[in-house]
Image (tube, rainbow, N blue to C red; front, side, top):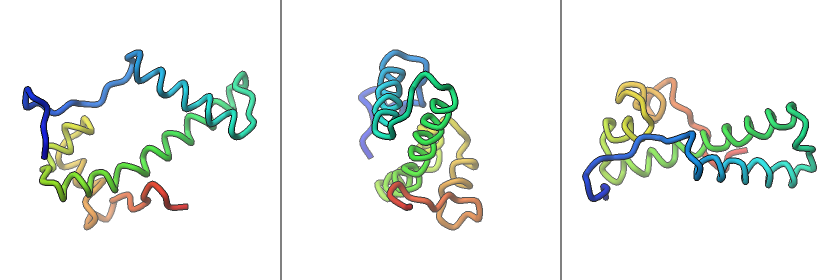
Length: 106
């Protein structure tokens, strides 16, 4: 596993300009692709919920890849800003609560 030069794993960030810009662009792009008016709050809720759902589908595969690369549950927890127990409960393939939907599942 490759860690940053300072050895510290990053925790999720939101509220910063770059994250907002990426999400704003994704909402706009998805809305245009679906032909939705972005001035309707119902459409915006739909678009944001769609992006959240798709992003959550990416995590099981990414966590599995990180675990295969030597990340501990503590490492995964730090990256997800949760506890190691919660990370393992949500992403260990043997957990009864694990999300088994992968990013390209329909």
